[in-house]
Length: 552
Image 1 (cartoon, rainbow, N blue to C red):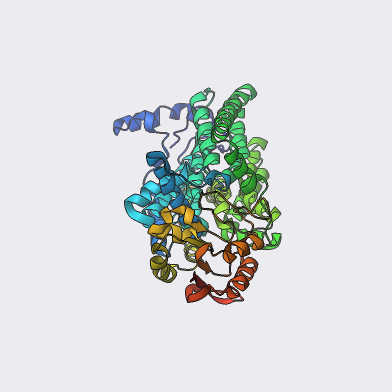
Image 2 (tube, rainbow, N blue to C red):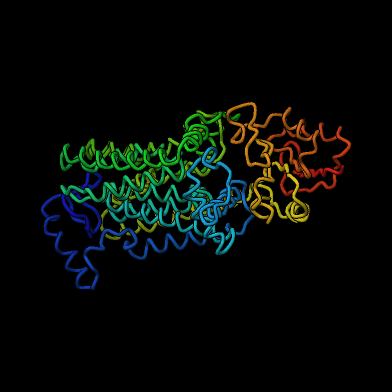
């Protein structure tokens, strides 16, 4: 069935199972499907919605949900999850009651008024589980949009395999149970790409381009790193419009870019200098890590290598079968999108959040992977052989399902379970009004009632003064990615500023050792507990929180 309007898209072949080709059959088929829909009572205006793909899409979404849902309860909150949830609650307190809040915009890698505020509502309704299930809804939406995009570009069979391959990737399943801004940004970029390919034939498509630009701007605001994929969406809009004329393609792209730029510029101007600082420190001038480029690329390959190989095959098939330069260029653009995230992080020598950042590239490449499978099936003779080929390819999905399920569990549990630490630290933090120094303090601030009084909490990256101001550190990145200033910490400890100090010697290990030495030489600070917190951390062994208390 061919439910696309206008002339065939560059990705369409001359014929496809159950779909008319580019010849005269296409013209006659334009009214047949509409009539059949009306006969079944379906409004013709709804035919473009991605969720109307039928039961195969519902099966894919059900499998994806079934694999992601158990991960929702797999572990306590990750540091980033806890920080965004805690920040969201403070944002609402600021809006509703005028409460003072930290300058989140200056060190968050996404606008704090978007995702944190949204997820805080889910957290209020059902805690961390509800926040993670909200992420699952976003990722399921991205899968449905992938189906719609793949179907629009190359037919239903391509859409099925594209959505199926993306849905069961380990990072995709993990993202469906992870309460950070990444699932929202994936959904919004997917929405922008779907809108970009929606205009039919020679239609102007102004409304779709406005929607694509708005979705892209929202994605960039929610997660600054998603801007890496803006050119992919723009090129996709250009290449899908070129068959209808270069001028039309230029107008569509101009509208998309204009809407996105105007909205983003307005947002940055409204946010002020703190937003510009946050964008610069977390995205434009991000500090390099210590991971080798080879290790970064190897990790990305282990998660998305199958999709990338299939996408490469799709490009080769298009080129070898001489389907046209426009089709091959479109496929190549989508396939190469899978490299953007890994190459960017390899450049920065960091694997931090790599498992989340490869998902968007995999979303684009999955379209080409699905196309490759579609073309392999199409080689089989029509009839029984093609049916057997289709069944074989569907059964072969058992491999990526098993691989993705196996990878998603470690991705969702590779941080320490904080239950034991929270149980011990809760009564200590809730007692009194003293200042607290906690490495990785975001988790405790989220879970404990004392977390709402944010002026009490300092971390090994930044000391918060009673006024809420920050002492900063030796580098412009202190408070974001850099360690705090050891001398400043020593001065505050000497004056007994912190009533409790909890260090785990992990994220800022060198600074922790310096702070620990100062504490040991101060007669007023005493170790009151050493709390194991779960996992083995080579080469130091099992992690522990060492808790000191000030006793004048």
